[in-house]
Length: 75
Image (cartoon, rainbow, N blue to C red):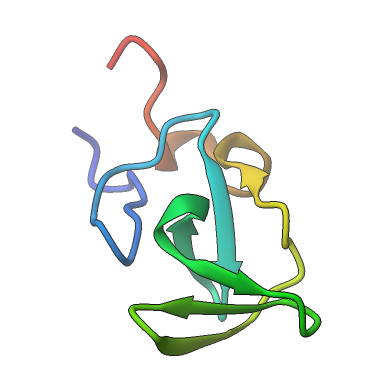
């Protein structure tokens, strides 16, 4: 697996091209690994604040990561 593959800061699983990804302070998380609160949106992990995020609905990994930073379906 490429060293450039990005991993979720919470679960450490690599991102696949179609994963919903939340970006907070230049760190990336699977959408289902964090809790989002509608305060502009603020991400939490295990009741600890991560910070604000603009992509409250998440973005597919291929939309915000470089192609060599996520896994294709076949991998």
